[in-house]
Structures are given as structure tokens and as C-alpha cells.
Length: 167
Length: 290
Image 1 (cartoon, rainbow over the protein chains, first blue to last red):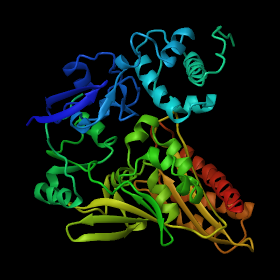
Image 2 (image 1 turned 30 degrees about the horizontal axis):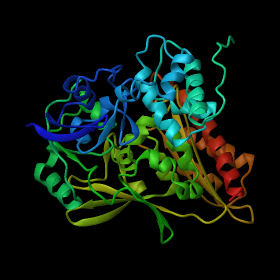
Image 3 (image 1 turned 90 degrees about the vertical axis):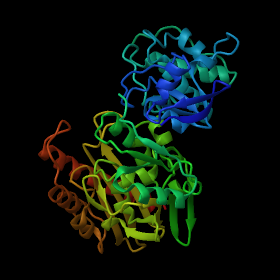
């Protein structure tokens, strides 16, 4: 039996008829054609499907679309405003925070909530903060650097060096 | 992976939810945080015909202290518990345990009620609740009833909750000063179930005598396990390296771990002993600063 739900996605209101078993990530990708949200493991392990639901980072493969009724969602498509990269996107770009890019949308949305809750996190807090997001390319160091860079930019401080570090 | 079809109900009141659970009986499952149930439904290990989503019922997310008890609503999410200052001040063990439950996104959804009601000995809150001597409040058609935590866990995925009952609150007695608590689990990687986990709460009087001790074990027994002999080894005497070693030894003997990818039975018993020692030290340390 189809259920009618209303969700606000990236500021735009949608009314949809969905099967209760439809997963939120499929609603986003297949009904709304927002394919920036990726499906990685499909078992709530990898974090590639991370979006913001009412400002909180969640794994959209483990939420039913019907549970998003009345909620406000943000996906990677809405992170840049008027074509201008967000501080996090700029951080990832400047620090080689991505190689293949598959984990990046989830990483950026997870880091968005992390910096909203804790504008000046330590490296340890960043590493714990992204522990639900897997990256198989970067070894995480450049992702951590990217988040440190974005934090500094958002606080209006001097930006850390983006030179690669060889250790 | 897509779950089998089901009917979705999203009641706005507890009474309505209980009525739905009675109406559908065994065919209905309660959806709380959903981070155990939805993965099971995707794998079709669980195929409920009706889901009763309790997330839209108000009044179940509180974390308050009242009449000497800390009261936590069944729908309080792990991320809220992680940042509940009063709770953490009284029970630092909640800071330890929430940090080790899955990952931040899962903690944004997962609820303490769901963690307990799932009845999985691999979950982390059961051992903590044993150490803290919690009481589970269940609400059903007849009203509420109190279930002492020692009578709550029955077996694999089985608890004292009856059909038509919802875990609405957890009550934890606020201990006297001189009490400390700590939890740690050994895990292979973030988000894994415990190879072994140990929760300890200990109360030490001004005279240095241990007045009370609670010790719970995670994932080393078919059900969450209270280490009774370990508790008794500590109570009524000063805390010494000898009594701590004894408690560790008893816990490693009394648990019943099974060999799996996380380690052999012997290894798990050895890790239980190590963790019991460490957590008693950590809890005692915190007790002396409280």
C-alpha cells in the first residue's frame, strides 16, 4: 500500500507516494534523481549514503523513506551555493581529500555536522567523527587535513598549508 | 537489498501504538532507531508484516534526574546520551559506552530503548545497565510495570517484554558520592561488536571499603551477564590488587564465550580478565575524584 509523504529536499518541497519498504537512499536517487548520494555497502557500514536529516548526519540506506515524512533533507547537491564551493568542498579540493570520489559526498555531509557541533575539533575528534565513513583511496590523512582546513576557513583563521606531507 | 513488503503504521500516541501491537500480535514489530531492525529486514532475517514506528510519539526522549533516579526515555538517541551533561557527570560510563557504539551517524538514530529491547548480548547497553542496577519500565495495555534488569534478558533476541509492551523508560538509581563507573570493549574496528566488553560501577566509602560493585559483561555469554562472583570479591573490603585480580579471574571463569572470527574462547576469557581489571581501576579512579 502506497503512503503519501512530504519531504523538503535541499529546500524544495516534494510530495511523493512511496512503498513503505522504499529506502530513503533509493527515494533520493531514483525518485528525485539526486545521484550524488552514493550506495556503497548497503549495510550501514560505509557511510557513502550519508545525508543530513533535520541537520543530523544519517545513513540513508538504513532509514525508510516514510520515516522522512515531514523532515528536511540535505544532499551533496545543495552543499555548494550558487556554484561556490563550501569551505569543506574547497578543503577537499585543495588538500587532495579525494581520489576516486565515491566516499566524498558522505564524508562532506558527515563533516558538515561535525563542524556545526564542534567548530574547532582536534585531529582525534575528527578521526572519531568520521569513523562511520570508509575511504579506500586516501588513507584518511588528506581527508583529516581537508576538515582542519575547512574549520580554519569557517572560523576566519589563517589557512593551514595544503602542501603534501610525506611521512 | 530491499525489505519484504510490510504495512507501515506511525502512531502519534503510546495508547495508539499499544493498540496496534495488540491488533497485529506476532506479525508486528516496533521500529525505534531502526539500526538493528532495518538491516535485519534488508537481509530478510526479519520479515514483519506490520511495522509500528514509535518515533513520532512525544514524551519518550527525556533524560532527567527525579527522586534519586536518573530517568532515560526509551527513545533517547545515543547521540543525545553522549552529550547529556548531567547524565555523564553522574555516570561517566555513558561517555565511554556511547563513543563505542557503532559510529556517529548510527548514534544519531539508534535509541537506548531499542539497544536493550533488541535483546542482543553483543549490544553494549545491557552490560552497562547490569552494572548500574537499572530498572526497565515497560508500558502496555494494562499500564506500566517495572522490570529489574536482572530479570530482563532471557535469551538470544528474547527479553521480558511481552507482545504489546513498549520499553518506555530506563531508571537508574543515583549512587552516593564515592562512586565511579567505566566501560570498555575490545573491538577489531570501529562499529564492530565487542570481542569482549566490561562495565563496572563501584562505590568506595570514606573508610576505603567497597560498599557496592556492579559488573556487567558484553558478548561473552548467550545473554548479557552479571559477574556475580566478581562483584562479591570486591564488596566489604578495601580495594587491593589481590581483590581486583580475584574479580578478574572469576569473571573470566564465569562467562561463556564462543569462538568466532573475533577470537578463540581462551582469548576472550583472557580479555575479560584484562578488561575487568582495567575497568575496576578506572571506576575506582573516578570514584576517588567524585
